[in-house]
Length: 169
Image (cartoon, rainbow, N blue to C red; front, side):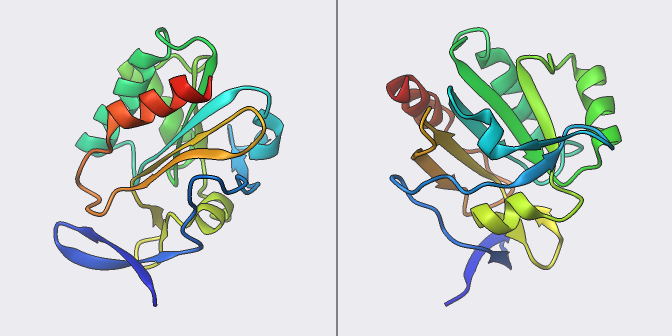
């Protein structure tokens, strides 16, 4: 059976697996800039929050990214990442305009080949953008929290995400 989410009530197809707590976090390659890449496997050694958004240029995505940017100061032992299919140049523009500290909150692009979306089950087939989701991955690469937000226009459960990150310590 196909996995779905909705955007303002309209059903959309999600590609890839539905990851669960206890699963090993899959590897994927994302763009930090037009030329620089980052592999998920290269981020091990720290608890990580992967905040997944459709596009930084939409209100809920912008609020979600700004919220996690604020939380970085409260959780210095947690690495924060925001992932979208926006081009790296658009991500850089957004971060500059919104005062996002890219040292504390890395913003990564899955635009090139959607490897993250396909590996984490967040790629919306019809739109070729990410759905809204969040994952907490511990130091050893095990998923400690996984949330696929059913309605793309809704916020994730910030309190549960942050609690899982603190618990994964």
